[in-house]
Image 1 (tube, rainbow, N blue to C red):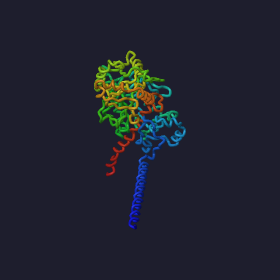
Image 2: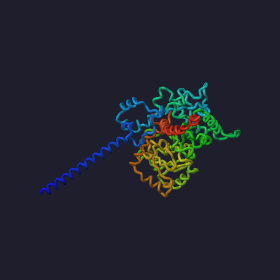
Image 3: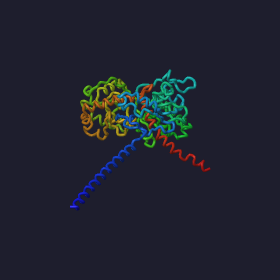
Image 4: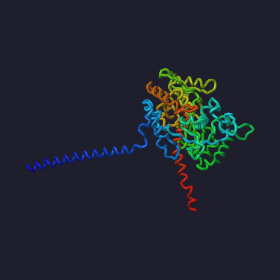
Length: 482
């Protein structure tokens, strides 16, 4: 009897020990989970500042305020005041108040002679100033296709305007006159306009005015102390037209280039890690008060432009032959002549989807015309790079199709017809949300193309600074041993 009682007590003791061990283990695991979760969250990020929109899905954690006085953030008092006055709608809108719009980029701009910038617009300086007083006179930029590569003009205007006290709070950039204070050195050469206007060689000249300007630019820039100090690594050179800077690009390549794509650049000269992709300025006017529906846009798929292109543009002619006879597809040759812009405007606004197919280079202005028309872009360009793609998810409002798939028999047309009303309406709505990111204007406004481009440049600054600091490790080694 005693043995049975001892056995029962031992069993009870074992059960107690097992329960105690189990509970202790669970508590231990939970405590470590909480510790790890807390440690994994960066303490300098306020949860209220995290963007809720899928469009802005990347927090710029690599751009901090610890880089001396560079790439500064707005002061905390202003930020807190802004948060306190935000309405619930503004707090829920991830397109506003994200970390992307808090950077102020400090820029030193070379005072290049007017022949490199506004002089190309036939502007004449008064006195010794090389810059127009844009508060009283803004030189006019030529229209037509010149406009699609006009980013040099808009960025330079914005940089000049940043010096006005009344405009500073609205800008993402600030011009400084001491290069040691700057995040980046800006080279104000209107290279795209120079190519468009002066790339032909006149009968009495040995080389074009465009090439002569590039030669003078290289000589000027590489002679500056700022270039010698950094080897050009902190310089920003604008070459948005694919054929601009053909002669100078191989000599200025340590700089950050601002391009439309990398189609005509070797990867060691230009690449997505080092350089900035900027949008074209759309030629078609923005579609204001667009109340379209899926059914009110009768054309399924729209393309109008040059069909026979060299380089990667073979897909255009292949798709033309496959799609030209489809009843709900418009696929035809077109240009800006004879009302081409008007026809394209009407066509895009009455179409559900607009084709953006690689041509001579991976990119084209057609993508940005489609965005302005709220015609869902269908991108068939395997090597395309897109503006500010590190903070914008293009798959929310664009459709991407591999070239090899698009050229398969009936693949593209069947795919487009499989997209229903609800999915198209969602993408159409998103286009209306993001279209402001691709609008060039003066004066610039928060979230427009000008300020988005400056923000994209600001996100390159930490990598530039890293390269500069690493390259300067041993600059004093020789003198220290003498």
